[in-house]
Structure formats: C-alpha cells, structure tokens
View 1 (cartoon, rainbow, N blue to C red):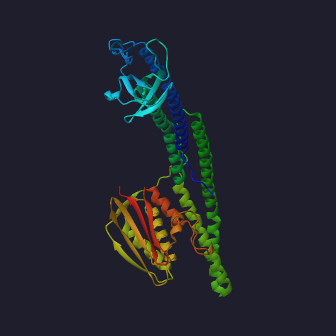
View 2 (view 1 turned 60 degrees about the horizontal axis):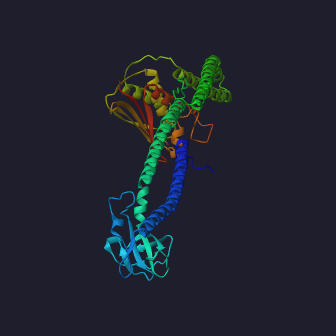
View 3 (view 1 turned 180 degrees about the horizontal axis):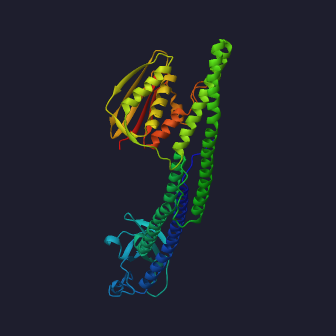
Length: 462
C-alpha cells in the first residue's frame, strides 16, 4: 500500500524546525532552573548582608526595647542602603517591634528563626531571613527578639529581566534566520525541482524530447539529475526517430506489394466473373477487402509519420469548411450500409490549413460516428466560429464511451470494443488529434454511455 508522500523540502524544514524548537525549549528550561537557584542565592546574600548591617545599627530605649537607628535608612548611603529590602524587628511570638515593612504595615510574621524562607504577605511572595537579636550587653538570646529582612520575589527577579529579554531576542533572531533558511532552501531546491518536473511532464505529454533541461543552481545533485534526464532525453529522441524512420521505410516498402496485390485482385475478379465461379469470386472479395484494409493502414502510418516528423511543411490555403464536410459526408454515405441520416447546421467558416489534412480529420470523425451508431439513427454535423476558434462538431446517437476510457481513445491503436476483428485499426482518432495539435487546436469529447457522443474539433483562427 502506497503511503502519502511528503515534499523533501517540507520534511527538511519541519525536522529542522522541531530540532530548533526542542533545543530552544531545553535551553529555556535550563535557564529557568539556573535563574531559580541563583535567585535564592542572590536573595540569601542580599538579606544576610542587610541583617548583618541592621544588627550593627540597633539601639535600646530606657526599657531596653530594641529599635533600628535612623541612620540605617539613610538613602544617601547608596553602597549600603537597598530600598527593596524591608528590615524590621519582631519578638519571638511574631509581634512587630520596629523597622520598615511593605505599605507601612505593622503586622508581624510568625516565621521563627529561618536562614531563608519564602512567605506570602499581603498577596505577594517574599523571601525572608531572620537572625537572633543581641541584648544591650552584646549577648544573643533566643527568647528575646529577631532581626528580620524581607525582599519581594519579584524584586529579585527584576535582576534577570535583561537576561530574559536577551534570550527572547536571540530566539527571535534564530527564528528569523530559520525562516530565511527555509525560504532560501525552497528557492534553491524546490523551485528548480518544480521547473524540472514541469519540463519533464510537458515533454512526456508532447513526446518532444528535443529540448534539453537546464539547471543554473549551485547543487551538484540537481545538476547530476538534470544531466541524467538530458541523457535519457537523447536516447528516447533517438529511439523515436528510429521508430519514425522504420515506420516510414516499412510503409513505403509495403505500398508496392499491396498495390500489386490489389491489381491482381481486380484481374482475378474479372476472370472469375467471366467463368462465373462464385466460390472464387467470394474468396477474391475477402482477399480484396483485407488488401484494402492493409492499404488504408499503410496510408495512415505514412500520414502520421509525416505529421510527427520535424520540419515537414504542408501547403496551406483558405478552406470553406462546409464544402469539405459535405464532400466527406457524401463519400461516407456512398458506402454506408446502416442507413444513417446526416443533419447539418452550418455557419460561414473559413480556415487556413491544408485541405487533405482537414479532410482526414472530418472523415475520421464521421467514420467513427457511423461505426458506433445504430441502424437508422442520425448524425448531426455543424461548424462555426466562437471565442476566436473555428470548430466542427459531430454528434451521434450511438453506444457512447465509458468515462474512464475517454482519455485513452486518442492513443494509437486503441479501440474501446473488445472484438479485435472489428473494422479499423485504432489510428483514426489519434491521427485527427495530431492534426488538430499541428494547428494549435484539439478535440473535445462529450459522451454518455448508450446515448451517444459529441466530438468537437477546433483550431484557433489565424
């Protein structure tokens, strides 16, 4: 079972994008963890320093209650004063004694003796460090009071805001370079590959391998692919030319013996008729009919070879399409045994083309319509000009064509019916399409099974 294919460029971009995204996420997570640990260390260092400085600026009133001296909060001491750190004293039971707290709050924090902890105060998270306070005589007492320093977690993180901004800037720059890389990769690989693919597809559809592919990029692999395709083009073109030459030579060689056989058939018929030999006449008719089929096949092969051969020129003239259609219909009606009725709808239509080639197209389309029509039915033939094109439309009431086979009917030697002994060689529609394409036109087909088909031959007006 075939799997859905993905563009190599898209695959490369997706994989590279995933790798860059995964690497970026890992680096951001690592940075976040490092900053988290560094934040704790920075908060501990800052708060420990403030507590140590505060302990040197503690005084006592007449009742030996501690307080923080006013010099401690001197903003002019820029080297030591930090307005983001709140230093205060509280008793062991959590009662506020003195100092500064957020929003001038005097609510204590019952946190006990902690080297560093994190608390939520008034809806915001803070780092807090506490140390034992000293008495007036300089001794420490666990039951007396604590020196506390508190700092907002957000204030600590502000120190890393610049680092985060730089990280996001780097991510943005990497993303921009990645987008440029993807666009450059698309321009250097996807665009040339698409152009090569379109050229190869066009050559395959037109069976024209004379034009070499060209790659002007910088990638060695694409140049190798282009050279390989050009080499293949040369081989295919050589084989096509050999095939055309073979068809032409064989067809020419067959014309003489076929002409001789056809002449001998006529002579033998005359002799048999004089002798009134019915068995001989019957055999000669079969032989003559098959000889005519072979002669028609050779003529069609020669005509198709001439159309396919490069540089072949055909005489051009102004043609009244109506006259050609009526002539072809008269010829077909003369040998028709199905009693087909032709109905016409003509508009003045003049085309500049080769008379014989246009007659071949009309005759092939009419013969095909008669072949697949039932006895006593009608064939509608019309011509005219529309949208800068001249057209000839032939509609029958025959058996129609299966939808899946419509694209195949213009292939050489293809016939939809399974009976290989049926009249024709499967070259008529292929020959008609080649002539239409020779003049820059085509043949459009509409068909419904068991209801009939419409073939529209069109070429651009000069």
